Amino acid sequence: MRIVEGGVCAPKGFFVSSCAAGIKYENHPDMALIFSEKPCDFAGTFTSNVVKAAPVKFDMGLLEKEARVQAVVVNTGIANASCGEEGMKLCRETASAVSKSLSIPGDSVLVASTGVIGQLFDIEKIKYGIDMMKGTLKSSANDANAAARAILTTDTHEKEVSLSFEIDGTEVTIGAMAKGSGMIHPNMCTMLSFITTDVSMDRKLLQKALITCVGKSFNMISVDGDMSTNDSCFLLSNALSGNKKIMSEEEQGYKAFLSALSIVTKFLAMSMAEDGEGATKLMECRVINASTHDEAVTLSKSVIGSDLTKAAVFGNDANWGRIMCALGYSGVSFDPDHTDIYILKGEGPKKELSFDVEGKPYPYELFGFPLAREGVAAGFSEEKATEILSGKHVIIVCDMKDGNEGARAFGCDLTYDYVKINGDYRS
Image (cartoon, rainbow, N blue to C red; front, side, top):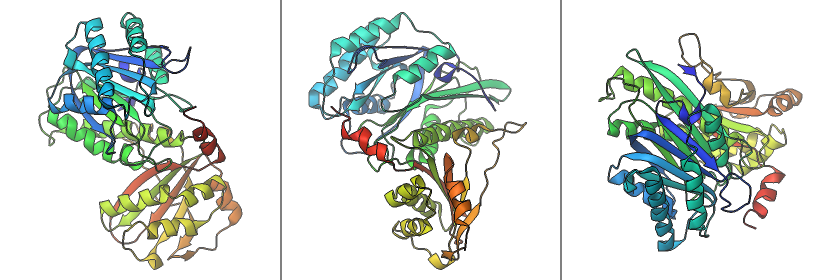
């Protein structure tokens, strides 16, 4: 397994374009288009919010009818959420415009939007953007990077990655780009994630792989406790690598693909948490030795979702009592008198992309500097704890001593700037 350049264009047969269509701001990139030279099987996961944006409903319909997809068009600035039937009409008109522009079937176009809820965008600006992009579809790493920038809202930087690996001697590639910075909370979050691959795989297995990896990545992040209306994650496969089609999850090819997809989605999820609105630090909680996996998930999410813990991390304050408190109100039954809490400096999302000579991910450290042992203060050095907490990636390890299961959840610190950013987001 190795890192390659190209983002969503790294797999064979994928092209991108982006432009500034003036949807909300002038002279600001706000549209992107992904195109595959061959129709793709696709998998998808979406927000669990009852209030779903029109693009989410539109795309869920395509997934349900098992449509084959050849293009994805994205706009930022306006979410097309809570807009009633007019919002659905805009989705259909957008897909139709892409269909006519690229001479592909109307039901082969996915649409995605992000931005302000409750506002309608100008369809003429969307059509203008599509016309601009149709003639500039390219497959270079620079163009993929430009598309990754065009889908951002309050994000401070683009988020993209691509990996290549072998399946039965055939090189297969996964590429991805995503946006997400605020209004982020499990399950799913204010994120749009587009994953491309040239693997040949049964459609149902694609969906299974995506659900499995989303459960360990995008569903394990929280910035502010707010779940969006537009969350969507797509996995498009055009099968152009030429590998023998994977038909069973027992095959080594499926396991290799699942491993690579897991790395890609965790990298993107951590990148979103790190880039949380106003954040200065990536905050991670690793729960180890829990009774069950579900309990480990619940415990880790409770810690990274705790505003008091997030504020303490921002202030470099080793207030481990807040961590213990968050574990305690998670709803999981455990013995606090046998719980240990540690902290250590992390290496950021790129650590997920560190491989040994055989292409296997380097293992991560389990323990660190002790703050509490057996439920009481460990008599630690405040100076040493402050040094660790001042890093850009703070890892909290909670050893439950109650079993063999674990989970990792990702968040960020809570800063003054979060309120500033969201105080005037709409206006």
